[in-house]
Length: 296
Image (cartoon, rainbow, N blue to C red; front, top):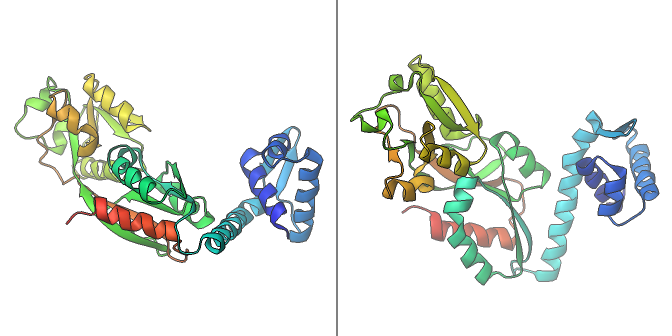
């Protein structure tokens, strides 16, 4: 099994096109076909189905993919470790939710870039459902996760801080004028929420279920910025971390409801695979996160 074969396999698994894979790895299409066939023969099983003009990863290919990604990632890390020693360098792939990336990390990134110019920072959005696969497969080196407790047995983690989360609405909304808002008051209301995998969204779902309360309608957003703009326009009641809406609350474009239900605050952790080698770049980023973000 050769490194080139693994590189071509991983590229084809993403592109699902022999033509685009050839362009990506700077070779001819016939060589991609030859390398994949050789790898399949060595493993004794098809890794891709070729159906008419479609290329589909087989079940065996799906099982092999995270190991191939991890092998390539480890080789890259080893190469940088040899060339740069203990000096932080090379790519550092970090997953972060939009709210943290936009409102918590800019100061961290500015300081990190000045201190460690040889590190190539790569940020990617993540969802809780796919985070573990990304860490295990080496697509991410670490991730920032908004969740009260990290309970995956293969994850190491460091708690950074707790974020306040508010139900927010336009100041003219009827519930914005209430001195108390409980879960039952949300019955029949238009709710503007992040997608179902979001930890603080789950808290609201649990609270409504416990009080046998159903919203009138729920509009889901993959972007907290889009959600905030719709709440500001008076389209419904949103649920967002305070850091996302702090400016709008101060300008009185939004108002935090006087929520009397279960607390909605959420912890923020940085997580990584417990068996992963902590490169100098990872160590440096962890230290800076603690310096800039960890609550006293």
